[in-house]
Length: 81
Image (cartoon, rainbow, N blue to C red; front, side, top):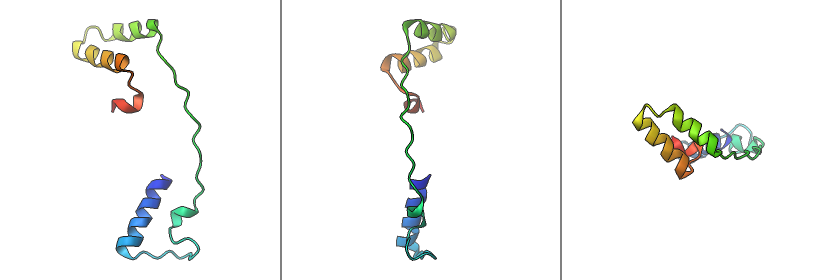
């Protein structure tokens, strides 16, 4: 969110002659403190988990193929969208 606002203000400064009220911070988003997100813990499926997930969708061949590709290609949740 912070990065998006920073880019928005940068665009407004460059293209629309935006001027901040606080002269110390021409880009108001630069004043916002950056926060680090904790690293996510990666979980891997076990063979029993894979069997169970594929078993749930075995009656739906298209979804079964899609889930199998996701699992065996090693796609992460963010990469499936």
